Every structure is written in structure tokens, then in C-alpha cells.
Length: 258
Picture 1 (cartoon, rainbow, N blue to C red):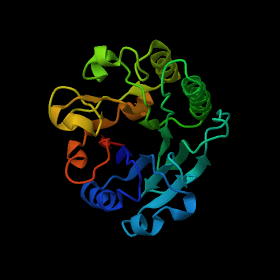
Picture 2 (cartoon, rainbow, N blue to C red):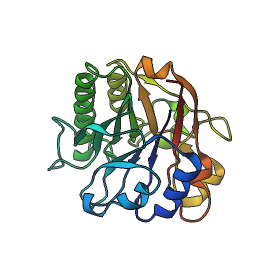
Picture 3 (cartoon, helix red, strand yellow):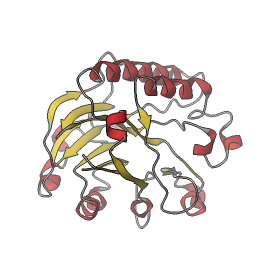
């Protein structure tokens, strides 16, 4: 089984690239983030022609998540159970069972800057995610939480820690929130880079950061041991970040022997 996660940064703007990538990479299930479209406008017909069912959760603004699956969709949960809003709940989480695997597609709030109301919202959202995943683990042995976490787990996951010293994404409370999520019984599936030494997944559009590899690893796959033990390969698909009009994130692809 092949699963993947990708912050597409607008499913409409990236649709031709998404469809090409789905044809070429052929994941059995893929988690998308930042779809930026309401549920009614999601291109379900287009991805359906490639054999995918869709579980989407979007409100048409800057958030939005989805799961595409060729192996079935069951027990779909749209939204984060018990999660906070800003001020209202946002479309940042969808979960579904795809074949024998339970998947969560998550788009964690950015946080904006330490001390900002959005930063406190981010920490509260991550705490609610931890609780919701912990509850789901009671019935799902093979589970993965995948998506754009907007947190780099360690200093090795940013190109220059000094540059981010006063910023979000690297603060101790954010990293502690990720550690608490992993402590529910999840393993960080570390992908291999297709180039360079670090498996960065995000590069700012500005200043040629992608070509200089000035990136961050913020798109993560957290899996139960039963799923992590089945991983045969995991990689950052840098090729999808190249060319005209890409997302500023690259997909993370994980192959499983189930």
C-alpha cells in the first residue's frame, strides 16, 4: 500500500499538477491540506476518474483538508472532535479508514508569532488533536496522522536554526506539543530526501529558497508502531516542487508492506 501527504496550497490552482502526480505516483490514499475550497466545489469528479473516492472538509477560505482513497473510505470524521476555533472551528482535520489503515489529514494552525492569540490557538488545537488521536487509537492498530504540522520537530529540521530563533514553528511549547502527540503511541516516519542531506518538505517561494535548499521539515507522518514497522520506503517527492506553479510544499510518500 502507498500512502502520501501533500499541502497543495489550493487544490484548484494545483489541479493539473495534482492529477498528473496522482497518475504518476499512484498512491492508494493521499491526505491533502490547504485545499482552499468549499466541499461543494472540490474536484471530486476529476479525481474520481482516476479511481479515488473523496472525504473532504473545507469552507472555501484558506484552510481545508481532504483524503483521497482508492481502497475505500469508512468512518469519516470531519473536523477535530473537541477542537478549539478561532473563534469558530476551522476546516483543519478529516479522518477516515482506507482499507485496513486509519488516516488523519491535518493542517495545524500557523501560530503567526509567539505570544499571539493564534499561537495559543495553535497549542490548544494540537492538544485537542492529541486527545482525539488517543481516543482513536483504542480501535485502530494501523493509524497515521499526516499533514502540515507547521512545526519543525528538531533543529535538524530547519536549514538554519538561528534564523528561526524568534519565530513560530520551532519554539519549545510547539515541539512539546508534538512530543505529547507522539507519546500517545506514534512514531515519526522519517522520509529520505531525493537530494541533499535533509528531508525538507517546505521552501518559501521567495529568494530562490527551493533551489538553495533553504527549507523546513514540517509535513510529517506519525504512525503507530504496527504501521511504522510495515514501512518499506518513505521519501520527499522533490520533483513535485519543481516546474511552473508548484505548491510551496512537496509531498511525502510512504510505501507499506501490509
